[in-house]
Length: 420
Image (tube, rainbow, N blue to C red; front, top):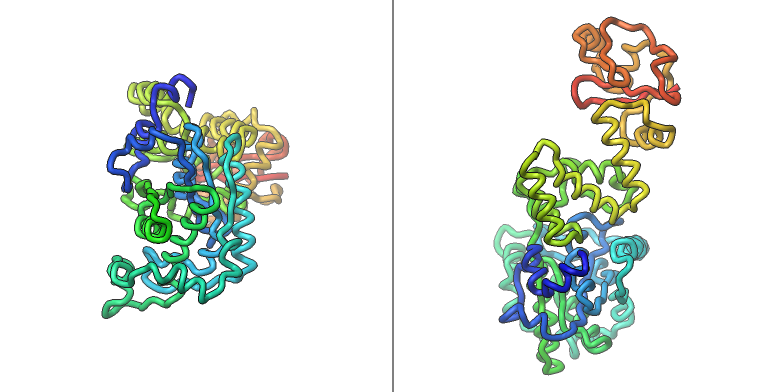
């Protein structure tokens, strides 16, 4: 966000404009603008990477950071060993201590990318729980929790009622561990504000109550809403193949960019506000131009560029944009060796270019059989580097290769890359 917009918009105003407010303990959100806050936000480490649902939470944090508030980012090395029972119909499988430790390291590396340029304190809740004495835990922490409101929480009641899968003491204690995190950070850093997702509201309140009961002080919570895919109505961040990960080994930068490029028109304004740091005037300008020519997809292109820059860096983003635009325009002669290497990771790739063309179509899954491959060619549905094949061709000729590669397309969107 540019300085002019930052100076004109207060923290509470920007949070509301970006759609980051779901529930809060503040009676009036303007209280946020009255002092400097030390806040914390905890992230689960039960997976080897954060995904774009988590990225929305990080962008929530960055608004506070831009407005000069002190951030504590918590990697859940302890809580991830137990697993949050919220939203789960049955017990999570416990993961190995070594697995969680590796996930924490991966999460911390991703935090360093997303929060680069901002100051924050990184903590791991395993550091203050691993040597905790069980008697001290029960007397100093557990004593302050009433079972009544805990068993009334929807997900716990569902698991405990007839037909439910039940809940173990370990999972039941998850909310107590999270409350203890808030108390520890309150004592050590003066932290009085917790940020979290809407599904963490109850767990966040555990810390607020614990601080009030044990320290006689006031603490607050703000949760952000789940980002919903306006087309599917499902939690944003999931695709047909699963989560969209920040780790390039789990979701390639090319697929990551394409995900954002293909979001629907209805939701793109929300995603621009949540997933970019563009100012209000910049987003308004993009949307005005987008509404005048939706076919040009300026909003989606802006979104994809901004988010991929943030997660994967400018260099790879520039290459992806170049390759995407050339694929769309079919001006393949401008693709260089590095571009083809990127595409080989994304498209069905065949190394043996000396095979008959119909065999190449079958091998690359552009046709299910030789008979179908011949029919596609005879129907004019097969293209080599953008040029339609008008007759059955036995093999690709040397002049059909660019830097040793040829892009074969069947129909509108089915692509494969053939290499010498």
